[in-house]
Image (cartoon, rainbow, N blue to C red; front, side, top):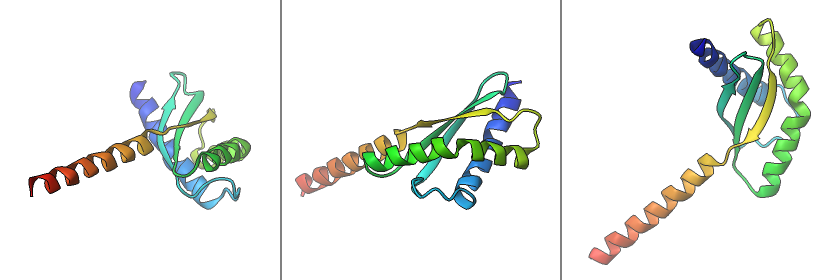
Length: 120
């Protein structure tokens, strides 16, 4: 069962990325959006889709509102594309882990540059 969850998660991630890129026309949805993870419930009825949005707080809020608004369309498109018995209920959740990682890398880079300058 676990393997089926993982396969469906990967498939849903791919399909939703494609749907957002090519079919959803909502201007609120940022082009700097990455689906970081899809977690399926054990019964495969619910999919939590974690998205990372690069931009200001307002851009993130607008993107999440746009995703919420497009949820029905995305789910119906998923049903057409996947042809599975039950299309899972989808929930979008903001994931800021990529942004945190980027900040940490920049800080480490700054510290590395300072260390090199001190040794000269």
